[in-house]
Image (cartoon, rainbow, N blue to C red; front, side, top):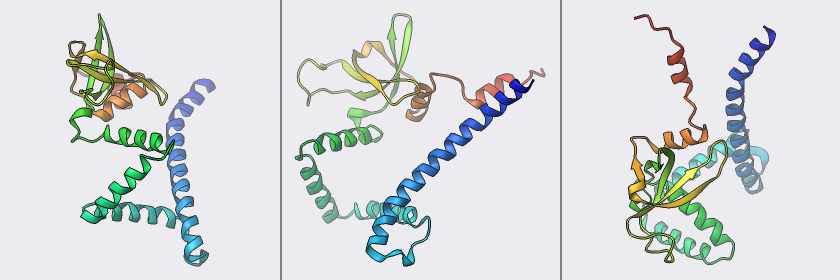
Length: 202
């Protein structure tokens, strides 16, 4: 009896505790980074806990507003050209750009569609990451093929495979739901489990 109740409590508190821990970690990391810069410039007199996070939010919003300016866009393009010419830095920076562009809805080359790849009777969930290969060396992909990223469950990783369109079937699932499905190994969500456990009164 004790074991059953303990496990039930553990399963209840674990996702709550992990979620709170991640939020606190993000809060502390951002707050510490920005607050150190603030204290170095203005001193500790005007600092209070949480100011770093507040300033970070304000700075991000202001940058978003300024990006509509022609001058800021040109400065950003100049900055990108410099970053892409620096050894090692260009690899990291370009990788981050590619990852972020994967979530952009206006990029047809990376539409982020959730698909299943059919291997006989088996199906593997994947995300369309590329439909054209014109900018890549020959042999990676060709006309009629598509690149699909297959994420691994319970970890940050995956594989990218190139398959013919005939092996790919688009499904009605958002990118977020597709990533969640892969991250949890396809296990049903809490709402689904509670619905299945409800007694049928009909």
